[in-house]
Length: 75
Image (cartoon, rainbow, N blue to C red; front, side):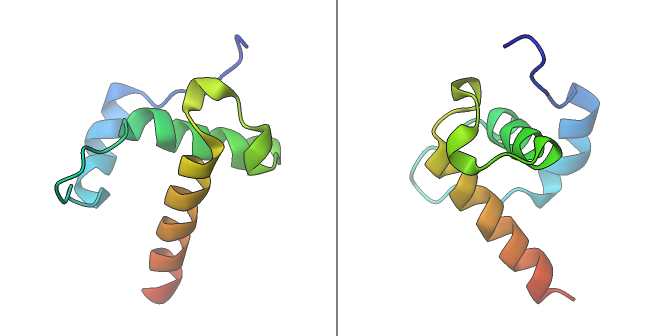
């Protein structure tokens, strides 16, 4: 798929302070996962319909859901 969305280096620098710290287990590539979450939301897709370039749909769902829960709890 040539029309995939990827965050720029500048966007990643601005977002990096909001990423959780790794706790022993190596983190999945944040750019790939966050770009996948944005792609799914922009295109109104279900998590299972996400392109494999972004990694496993379960990872996108878990990370997106966790970030959404944290954002809602801060309000």
